[in-house]
Image (cartoon, rainbow, N blue to C red; front, side, top):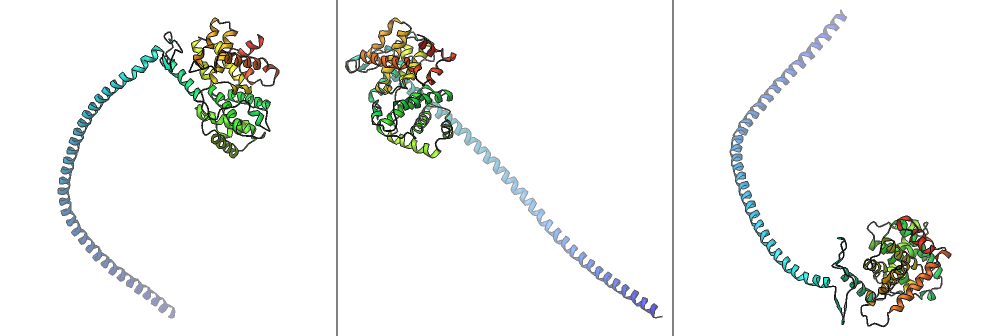
Length: 403
């Protein structure tokens, strides 16, 4: 009996709890329903409001769209009007420019006519450098050849500050002429392997000579001066400039980057940033054109000039005299009859009455060049000889050695 009563009480309590939960859940459901109904009512009321607003907004949107269309039309009209005004102003400007250009062209053609006459007033003398009437090559600026050569002589007469002094080795305590020749020979080899221009090499040697003319240098920093001068020349002449690390690498990493930068600053400050000069190669290019040199003759003149860079006496002569002397040697070597034209002062002096420079200077420079080139084979300076012994350079070094 006790067991049955216990079971009934258990079942009753379970049912009671179930019904309690059921009624509570039902009440919750009713409450949820009421809450949902209120939400729906509110939502419907909100929907009604939004509908009104929607219609109102549509009206406003239509008005704004019409306004936007009108604004676009007005802007397009303005742009079209501005374009018309711009076109008219451009036409007016172009006509003005054409008139100005015509005036300037008419003014600029006056000196060009003078260049065709090939006459320049320098004091009382009238100088005629080159006859350009027979020039057929379009790439040669024949109307300006005489002007260019004249300006080269003007720059040469102004002088280089500081001027190189070929006696500077007497004031150097740790280096000598032999060390200079070794450095220049090494620079010629580096210059050729990098494929630099001719101007770069001549400018490099000029910077070295000018720096050593006014300041002392130690033996350990002598090669550092060489690569620094080469780097400065490359910055002015070359398009594809090597990095500082490349210059350090060719010295077998003998120097650091900071040392190169410091030396560059010292060289430029000593030279007062004036390292440009009319090189002998520039004068020789115009002389070879004037004397109608063939490729082999032109390359021989270049070989003579580059070989003469090894000699410290290169700093003794003016660039124009070196060019005339090399042209004189080439013409004598190939037995050209008009070799005496190289003595003409107009090629190396602005004032022909100047007695400081004469035929003697050309012959003296030519003797120094020939003596040095003849003795190159007896030395260890073979970079220039190897360079000009190659077939692409007509083997002009071999021709000179065999004769």
